[in-house]
Length: 202
Image (tube, rainbow, N blue to C red):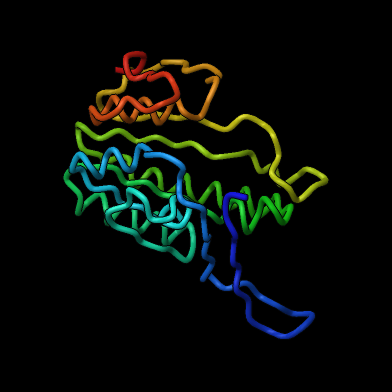
């Protein structure tokens, strides 16, 4: 078992509604994570959304819980303006909880459009030395027959003024490649697993 997820709701039988007060109670990581390495080295680690919960608070120097993806993007923009260096790590849960698991393809598409609009506002705010990474921890196709996580590959998009354009990162053998890459960016680690792709994009 990795964690227990608590999803509070209000209402009466037959018409329950989930609230935004979800909490994830995770088992602490068995060893130091990239977040631990970063916070020990000094850079702030800002966890937005359920990041603090997922890592049982380990390595997160500032936690901001959110109520929606729009709120999450608001917090990312605010943290970017307030944080001169460090890691801003955000999780946008609505794609998963509100649309993917509920097989709501129309809602999922509309949320993608909302995120795309927010992303167009965020990109110009990036500083010359900033690196933006967009990825996911699993697939969640809202058109499958099941309401479970689906098994397609997840995106790995990297942007920033110092990122070489047109690089195809291919299909990576492990999620750990991103962690190792960020360890290279911040000059901490190396982490236990993964291969850095920093030289491919620099």
